[in-house]
Image (cartoon, rainbow, N blue to C red; front, side, top):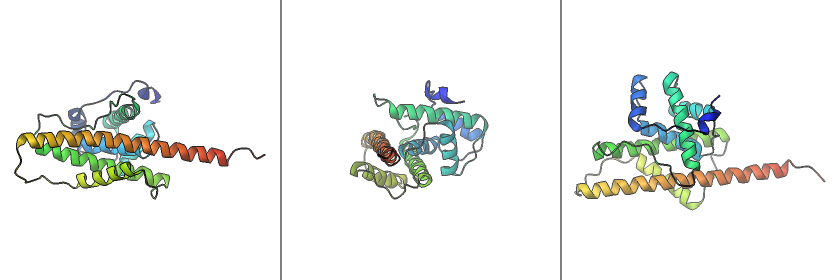
Amino acid sequence: MFDSLFDEPEFYTFDEIANQLLEQGVALSPAEVHGCLVGLLAAGAEHDADAGLHGVNQALGLDLHGELADLLIRLFAATAAALENDDFEFFPLLPDDSLELAQRAQALADWCRGFLAGYARTMAAAGTGGETLPGDSSEALRDFAVIAQATEDEADVSEEESENSYAELVEYLRFAALNVYMDSRARLEDRQRAARGKSGPLH
């Protein structure tokens, strides 16, 4: 039913997701929901509508339905397409610069928390929670955990320095998530090849 969504994915803004969450009384940040979708995919979730919606519901303890469920399915399709894009079009879904830096930094922490929830859910469902990724990706997951727990820094730094640090962190998360996704996909392909080899014809 939703296969065409992955052929012509449609993306949404932070505010559009926020409005839908608010209308359904879901007390979550759009950043956390998007981070969860990325985490699901980065751990090897299938690129289909059911995997995205069911995964978010399970990972975040939700019961999404109606327009919000349809929107999340479309966002999942767009996110999967962005992660697969060779031009590195993937970006974390975060508020724009019109919000105060503290609010944007909180959204960044929310995104990391969602990513880890989605990643853990897929790994647990697949029974691969004990597997480890290559060094850079494993380090990225540890960094996400630190950022997810971060609080506002009280250090005496200028607004420009804070903005620059935020921009650098967003860019780091962007490419770190892509690396985790690619490493997980490579690992999944290795397992599939090994399984095909074991089930091949006997001579």
